[in-house]
Image 1 (spheres, rainbow, N blue to C red):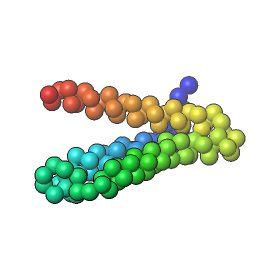
Image 2: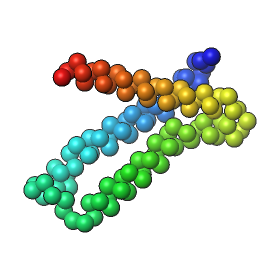
Image 3: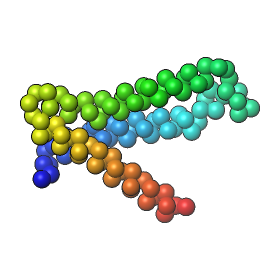
Length: 108
């Protein structure tokens, strides 16, 4: 059964994840313009290191946004609420993903 309180509590975490993904996607879309030298090649050998650091940072950030609060609830003995919050957060992200793909399909 869907608990509206838990659903509403998970909305800021879903929104934070969506905003973070949008920010990283925007940076990656414009990476050559921001950091490149105009010839389409990475400036140095540090480019792969920067990409991997971004990957690790993104994984940690998304983990905290999706699982941080639910894990604290679970540890505090509110197991059902913690699990439901993970389900709601992932469900909201999935719904936004489907909506995004629908919008992209209608544009193209």
